[in-house]
Amino acid sequence: MTFAEKILAQKAGLDHVEPGQIVTVTPDFCMSHDNTAAISKIFGKIGVERVKDPERFVIVLDHTVPPSTEKYALGHKEIRQFVAQQGIVHFYDGGVGICHQVLPEKGFALPGTLILGSDSHTTTYGAFGAFSAGIGRSEMAVLYATSKIWLKVPSTFKIVVHGRLRAPLTSKDLILKIIGDIGADGALYRSVEFTGAAITEMSQAARMVLSNMAIEMGAKNGYIAPDDKTFRFLEGRAVRKYYPVYPDSDASYEKVLEFDASDLIPQVAKPHTVDNVAPVEEVAGTKIDQVLLGTCTNGRLEDLRLAARIIAGKKIATGVRMLVLPASREVLLDALSEGLIDTFVRAGAMVLNPGCGPCLGVHEGVLAPGEVCLSTANRNFKGRMGSRDAEIYLASPATVAASALTGVITDPRDVFEGGAE
Amino acid sequence: MIEGRVWRYGDDVNTDVIFPGKYTYQPLTAEEMAQHALEDLDPDFAKEVQEGDVIVAGANFGCGSSREQAATCLKAAGVAAVIAKSFARIFFRNAINNGLPVIELKEGIDGIAKGDTVKIDFENGIVIHKGNEYHFPALPPEVLAILEDGGLIPHVRKEMGKEKYP
Image (cartoon, rainbow over all chains, first blue to last red; front, side):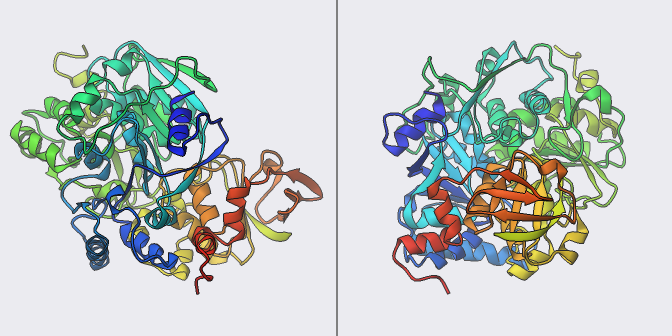
């Protein structure tokens, strides 16, 4: 059996499942964020007084923190009341970080667990060997009441990545290349397993980028086999004992796709779809008004380190606004102690509090009509960051940092200290 | 059997253009949500949509964010069904969970244009367009039951033996 078949069989209490089969499961953990205000109201319509298993739910405020409007503030207040009433202990108020960074840091993203979240990028925890997928608000409300949900067993694509990524290339370039090649629906409804030498060599943070963006090719989940790097990350964090699940060696895959990281060049997704990908040369010279470094895709310490290495001692180009959005308080503190934040601020960047920020266009740096943003985030849909007449390009932290210095989209290999490795 | 006027869109219609993120964390009524439906894709839609209209689109309809309002705003706008070559999985679930029929149709979509009329025979799984019949697969029984009960919350209340929510 593939990873997806094996774990869904296990969680459904079955010996064997087939793709297409519908199973009823109880997730190990369920995640919701600022949408908990709406979910708690839907929960109220079910007619059940108490959340069945409060310890199963993790709530992280991140999308509109700190609230920029009275309505957002009221939503947060309602969530705090709900959490207190229902005895939900795994609650992280604004400032702790973005949910997809907080769940790993706080030890919920564990190998062999089933995690569902009312957020599409819940796929991120696949990098820890969890089966994790996004669901809707009504489904989360029903999970509060019953702890049960139906899932269809997906068939599986195996994506094998050979070779080795050479700095300043990152896993972001790799996932953009994969999505560009197979398309925004290239893995629709499939489980994806990322494997191969390049994945094994990657840091845990770099792997999270792949799983985070698996949804951008339509995948239900994006699994990476947990290894010593994963176990080391979870040391002192894991909220409980865990039991990794690995695909069987004779598992049956619908498709096996192969890529080579060694000959990769920096990739950029052009407006307005994530699969509209081009090599950086094709868009180099495009004028930009804003850059965003951070988010649940690329707001981790190694992303900030790479960008700071390029920016250190230099200034952001005149007319460009650079926003730095660390993925969590832990990342922010580490970046502070390493002097990275100092580097960014001296270069002229604005540092935002950990959270989702302008990525989804609700606050903290939305775009005016006609403006162009180069971002390390995961989506560049029309209107995503504000005006529907703005344009969003997506790239790696290295490309974003290099471009912040020049004011136009720039190949990071041109400015990376000592050139490309 | 329903009959509806068609709004026609292409591939990869994402949930951001169906329901922009800036409204996602605001408590809005169904009518308010309907006013923003498809705002960043087709500003005419919310103004001119009529009860019973049908959306016909290409592949991967509803990709992107998990926001449930992408389904509820269409339902609130009076859309009777969405027919597409394929759906993103979270949107598909959200639509069913809100009693909005979603029909995955492999053939015939390319010939359907804006303003055409389509008939949908849910019982027999047939879309009829200009006299041609195109078949779509039935939903699994567990999933069909949710749609037939009008969505997940009424379905769960029914399973718990509770009365229909007022």
